[in-house]
Length: 96
Image 1 (cartoon, rainbow, N blue to C red):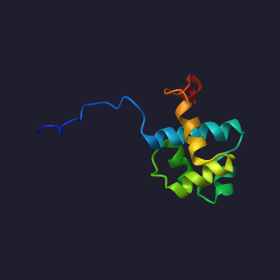
Image 2: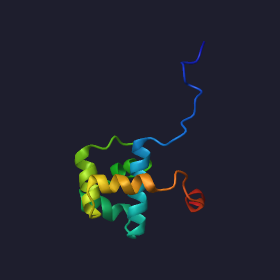
Image 3: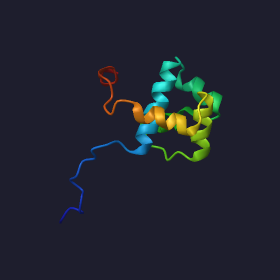
Image 4: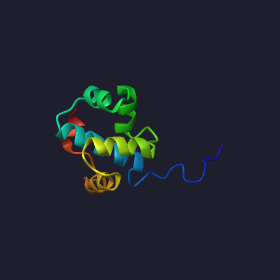
């Protein structure tokens, strides 16, 4: 049985969902908010917010707008913040 083309190629960069999710986590922890508090404030379940933060949810524009607005930013400002984050998680994240 043969492998599909590209199956052995590793991603060199994170997916947009992962970039956005990491920014949500970074912003939430910088504001010293728990997932529970942020999820309640946004009207989402902690399960869904966890999926967003791990980059496992396909986030709609409405959700992006709600999250960025909560942190006092436009969607564009939030994405600019997200894209400026280091590409690799910090050493601290590996220890958690």
